[in-house]
Length: 252
Ligand SMILES: Nc1ncnc2c1ncn2[C@@H]1O[C@H](COP(=O)(O)OP(=O)(O)O)[C@@H](O)[C@H]1O
Ligand SMILES: [Mg+2]
Image (cartoon, rainbow, N blue to C red; front, side, top):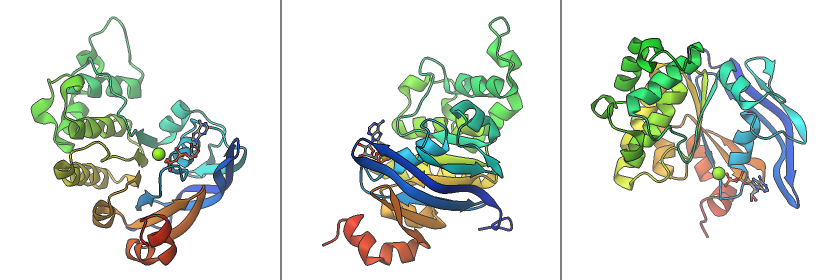
């Protein structure tokens, strides 16, 4: 944590959502502080993505509230929430596959400035300097002219994060940023992402199954079980919790 660690960036109170018989969010009270790098762990179906979807406006909760930077965002939509400063990357990157890496970032740049125009070439309206800096930051300079469709999965993840970062979020939420990435590349992808976030002073929250990655990059871990936060704290302490070892890590 850094000097702004006491600032509450995101706070949920009593978030509840039921899908039929499944309690996907079971009264979640959760606080994230500026400067934290939170890893969320939990078995498939525990409700990790549902919680993200609620906090980013993709799903409305049955009850409860989400406050971001002092503002109630519970009923706001995804685009509004993005503009308020929450970036998001997806388990399956949402890219403009027919565009090159550089064009994807140019599109993000014009989306930010709302200069999108059918008549003016993209490169002319985009902030060329911001695009160039982002290519450097996420180490995609050498493949800037490659179409997004041909990128290896690790580079797609980096590009997805870079597009979200172009909007200058304060919080970046990443759902399984290393899933689908070849195991020998996972650490390099995560190292690049986390260095970029730290450099831009962005607080992060990522869902991750690989314990080595969690231990290497998280300042805090929250473990989800059946729509609830079953453990939350220092990474070492959460991984030492017998319930978490049994229910989340599958130890006998
Ligand atoms: N749109 C939906 N409709 C019905 N059930 C859903 C929906 N989204 C998620 N669920 C259910 O809610 C539970 C939590 O899912 P999810 O949040 O995706 O878990 P996780 O991300 O931890 O794997 C699961 O039982 C899942 O099947
Ligand atoms: Mg999920």
